[in-house]
Image (cartoon, rainbow over all chains, first blue to last red; front, side, top):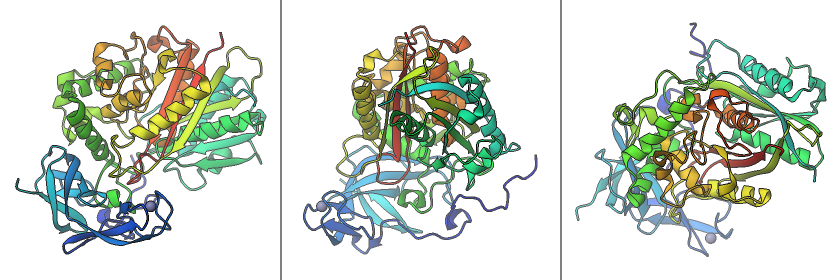
Length: 136
Length: 379
Ligand SMILES: [Zn+2]
């Protein structure tokens, strides 16, 4: 079989992580002791989405806000295949921040955690949020 | 409103065909659908194409081999629901009298774009954080398992059922052997708890359908309902696992249109890209109560000789998943089942059928789109 598609540009925007062109980073940002985002000035809906035209829940104005680094696991998994530059195994969790949005985090230790387990976002790895289990 | 009918269906084979052209895959499906509908190509007065990774201008590149010129034609991208989204637009257009005979096509050729797992979308926060689609479904599964106590064996039973069905589908990509539940569980882990044999293969293929008005042909299938919904926010306020609510919204609309209850559906083709997907979908469709979906396959309810067979074609787990084509492949299977043309896969009761396709992956939304359609054979 010929090397169809190899070395040719495709419609797919792979991103820098897998050798494509860089794209704007849409991931949540950790700033010291807080995760950056915005909150609705009326209904208080929190989100880490950037540059919103209005609150996606009630259409009122939003303002920048800072969210706690701590929260509870909604669900978690350990991925056993390579994805982009990530080498397996790596743990991922949806984490409901205590006063804020649900964010996807990488787990410092790859393991499936029970929903409700408390995590703290302790840093970033190449722009990904990294969380660690809090001692009970 | 006009009554929309399904006049004909056709598909390519499904598998890895990197040495074929996207057009060739599409033409195979279109030719079969046109023959099946028993029309001349110049009866087609609009073309709607669903494709995710097709090249720019994919519809026109296909059109130039068909000799169908100047008609309205467009392409829809709604992730895995692209094909059925195109179908839904055709149904709506016929209902409104806009067109009399629409060619719907779903096509994708994945083998020339990806080797191994699909690279997540780099512009999306979840994609940028290396969340692959099986990882998203694994997060669904872990949450669901902890809430309802589903066992690994119940998850694996979906793969065994669908891969058994796929053995009788000559167009399916995977039909070498039927694994045991233990073999499914022992296959290599992709994203805990989903093992390799619980994930659909990436594929190449095309599916086509001819949708038109009621021309008095008793072989045409009555489109009782077609409902399409886009995603809604899925976030910290969501108690359902990702994707569940979008399927439920589409299902409610479809049942209301058809005036039917879930119990009246004889045979279903649903989106089983991963084993957990079939379980959640059947609950969202009301085939099982919440938390009971995992019991359907082991109990035999959804096997081919069961009360409500699900994925008699083998589903995505056997057929493969050429994203834009998947919904059209599901539609073709339901058409063959309702007409009694499914050969070794034929189910006993086959008057009313349902197709569900769910496309997702955009972070923070409960799906990109979901389509549910209900069809019936004319009595
Ligand atoms: Zn608001």
